[in-house]
Image (cartoon, rainbow, N blue to C red; front, side):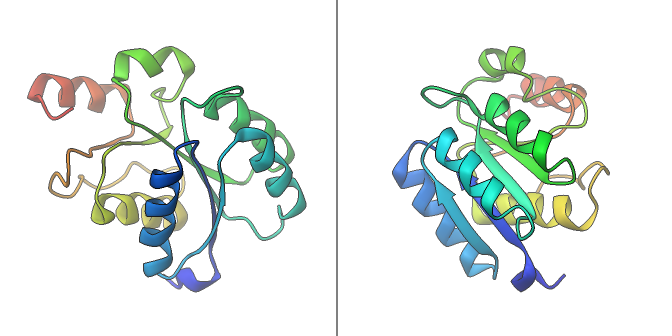
Length: 158
């Protein structure tokens, strides 16, 4: 895949995580725009919607959360792909919708391998379940369906 033509908007209120994810993705050849809040991300996505390929957002943020923010962005750009990320326990974010069927989700902390595999898969084969996750890197686990979450919880992976 030629990722040099792919642009990702990363949204996270934690500046260290935002910078780390930006570095990881830029090293893989992606163009990365960042925002530390939902309101700024909505404006960026609106202005640059023709050039944006993927939204990668934290679920829990002050003010508008990532689920609410993505709903606003996707209402204006329904073809945009989205991946949610969170370091919170699954039970606390499940009611927000980040773990429902068909949603791309990656649990923090994650390594560059897990992140790039999730991003590459979402961009190349949108709508298809991801391949098995790479070996556990720093505790991160890719989760796409509730069934996978339940299995990961039983296995003690997350």
